[in-house]
Structure formats: C-alpha cells, structure tokens
Length: 267
Image (tube, rainbow, N blue to C red; front, side):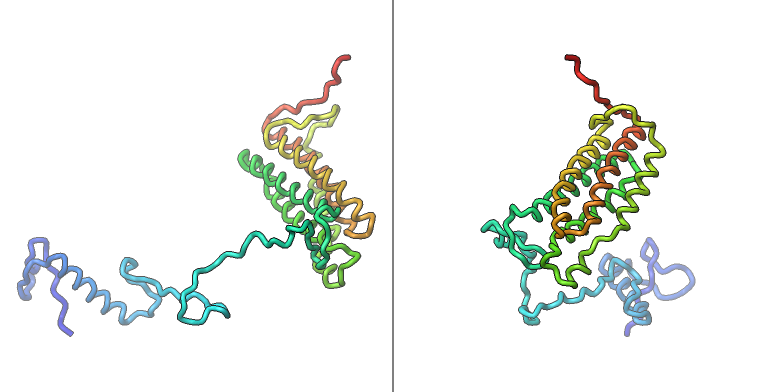
C-alpha cells in the first residue's frame, strides 16, 4: 500500500524539518487522505467503534418475514383494521364469547365506564396545565377503569375459572382511594353549603367526571346485584365519585378559585 500523502501547510508546502516537497492538496486530495487515515485506524478497531460519525453508517437488520411473506420479497406493512363489521347486526361479544345485543346492560356499563375515563382524561389535561401533583393519580385511576371494564365484560354467569382469574377485581384499589380521600379532606376547609360545579377549569372538569362516575355506578350496581360482576367494582366507582368531588375542591383551593355555592332563589 502506498504511503499517504504528507500533510501540507496552508501555502501548500511541507513544514520545515525535512521531507520532500508536495503540491497544494485540493478537495479531492484531502478526501482521499482522510479516507486512507480512517481505513488504517478502523482496521484495528472492533466493528462497533465509530471513529468519524459522519462516515459511519450503522448496519440495518432486515425486517422480519411473516409466514405469508417469503424471504426476499418486499411487502408493504399493513396496520390492523379498526373496524371489524361484526357489530353491524346490533350485537357484540363479551370476553367469554357470548353474543349479546348492544343495548344489553353489560355494554351500557362498559360505555359509561369508557366515558368516565375520557372525562377524567380531560380533567387531567386541565390539571396538568396548572401543575397539580395529583395528575399521576388520575392516570392511575384511568388504568384501573380498564380493569373495571375487563371485569364487566366477563359476566360471571358464563365465565370459566380462567376468565375469572384473569379479570378479577380486588379490594385494594378501593382502600387506596379511601386513603387519597382522607389525605385531601384534611387539607380542605369545612363544607358548610352545597357547592355548584365551579372553581376553575380543573375543578369544573373534575366535577363533571364525578357526575359521569355516578352514572357509571348506577349502571354497574344492577350487574353486581344479578351476580354478573364483582362487588368490588361497584365499591370502587362509589369511592371514586367521592374522590373526584374532594379533588375538585382541592384543585379550586390550590388555584385560588372561588367555589360557587347554592343559593335558594327567592319565590
């Protein structure tokens, strides 16, 4: 291998100290010299070491092939469809595989629970804008509502033992809500009048979530009474509405917003 060209000074001449004179190095000469140096250095380094990031391109592994895509054939990736057309006739499936009308009280309870999670998500966004520290609790509540939905979608009358173990709902989340309620209640002024949903956007959104929670509870209680859902699900929704009420008052207090109280209209 030929020796690399010697580095030239700004005027194109070899620095003092001996050696042969060389011509000014142009752009192409500098590129060749640079690549020669890099090749000599990287030859002694592991393949994972990058000397000059601008010249190093990490290897890209080939995409995995599915059973239907033979190797060597490129197929565009497809996202799963959102629609299934299985509910066009007005029926839907439970987790146990039953086909029930969409007006069934199980799906009413599931819809109310989903609406509740959406309302809490909106309240969480408003509260996050104000820097409230309880936003993480609201996110955890939304995750628990997913478990509530799983239990409701598994009617006990048709659930096998494997279904019950997978979608059971314990009392632990109920006790956690009670601890949160007690913690916030101790920081609030005593309640001496009926409060209207108010106190700023965070507080009002939490009050709205509380009202949706009450409706979800009313949908779930008949399922529990009929032995189709776990009693802890109804308990959780009951405590959750109390938690959202206390949290709405706490948000108003932290933001310095006035809570509007009920005033009986004059006859």
